[in-house]
Length: 69
Image 1 (cartoon, rainbow, N blue to C red):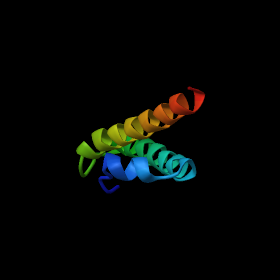
Image 2: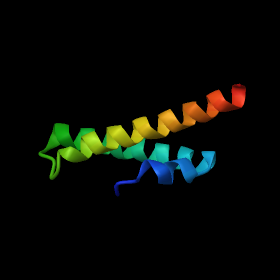
Image 3: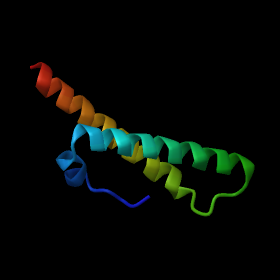
Image 4: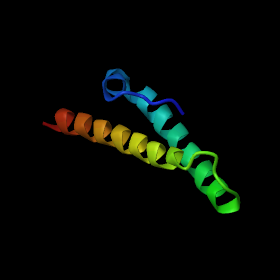
């Protein structure tokens, strides 16, 4: 998964963020499964994926807070 800047994430719509979040979670699941079964080619991908998921969730929660205010 390519590195996505926070500014790019902020410019995405809620639907795009939802799709990207689903893809990131699926990818993280596959990486964790692969880590259990065999050696990963790049273990840093797990960390990158977790950070991407956290960024997306943070942006979504910030938007929800702005809408409720």
